[in-house]
Image: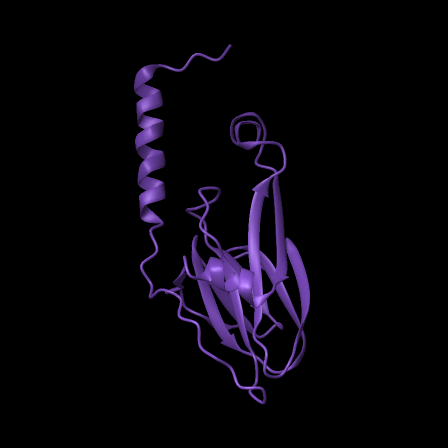
Length: 164
């Protein structure tokens, strides 16, 4: 059995709280804007708030053109053209070795909502304390009603966007 001294446990808790508190999101809240039937769509790419990997930013490359970084509990709105689009995802600064690739079809007059989600495959305790973290990451498209309900709790990312 592993023995941990109370002082080491207290230090771990303090460091954990500091890490979590540093990832507080302060951008403006989500506001839904109507889109006309003949307008080019927007992509709403978002990462819901979760304590899992909350201190890490994730990088998303859209169509090998724009790089977006999302912190925990943030979203970004990007204008896109109708057609097929690809999103590549990886931990920040490692998109050359992507973890995920996702394609979606954008339609004129309809916004696209893509969610990034991370969950552990083997439970939190096992993933964090026993073995290296094993995650079940996924990108997927949601309908507008579901996405807007989640986006209402998020903030616009303040992280910079740049060209690929």
